[in-house]
Length: 117
Image (cartoon, rainbow, N blue to C red):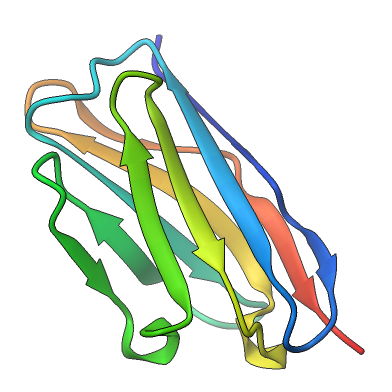
């Protein structure tokens, strides 16, 4: 059974930083697995924040470029999202996603990030 468990969310002031972690189990994590972070704010559609391929290629939403950094540790089956210079509009539920060519597409339960003064 594949499980993705996110952690690291919370309340932070504008300009602050958070680091989200996603721990994967039940799935190999090296080849042909793209991992990503998505977010959904109240009343909004879910959107891709950042993704990283098994080869290390990354993609970011325009709104977070230069502020967020996605990374992965294949040996530990972990995905991270370093978030700096947080803004009010970054408030959302952040979810981890893993897309495996052989196993399918999986989601974590999400972690709340609230940016507020």
